[in-house]
Length: 72
Image 1 (cartoon, rainbow, N blue to C red):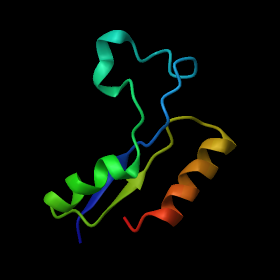
Image 2 (cartoon, rainbow, N blue to C red):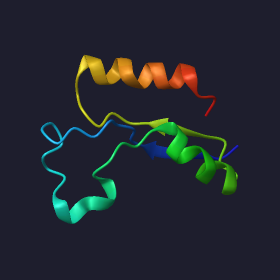
Image 3 (cartoon, one colour):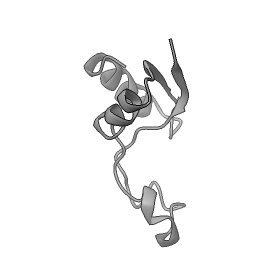
C-alpha cells in the first residue's frame, strides 16, 4: 500500500488565505479531493493523509466530512 503522507484541501478564501499572493496563483484556488483523485490513481497511490490548512474546529469538521465522502 502506498500513501501520500501530506495533503491539504481547502476552499480558497482571499481574506483567510491572504498570505497566498498573486505570484502564487497556482494555489489561489480551491483544492478538493476530486482535484487529487486522478493523480493518486495514475501514480498507484492508495490514499492520502489530509493535513489541516487552518487550525480551527470548522477545519477539522471540513476534513472529517471529506474523509467520509471519499474512499482515499
